[in-house]
Length: 94
Image (cartoon, rainbow, N blue to C red):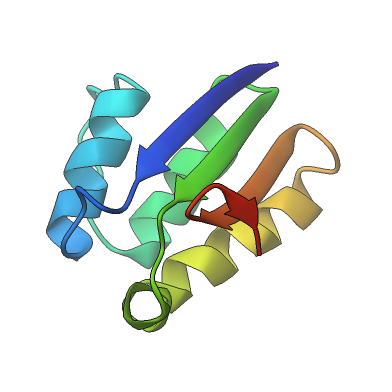
């Protein structure tokens, strides 16, 4: 299973997240850079199985990116073991 890590100490805002996500997954097909577009991309275009980690999320970034965390939690459930999602802060599981 491939592991993709997104480092939030380098991701300051939502547009930066979409750029990092597109880069990590080499997504070339355009999609709406919003939660609906991201959901469709995760469900239809990610190379499964995959593990996705959000690393270095401070408390304020957890609030800022909360909708993304929920989306990936729901995708993990929907894809029934084909996607594993973790959120880590400073190298420790949270």
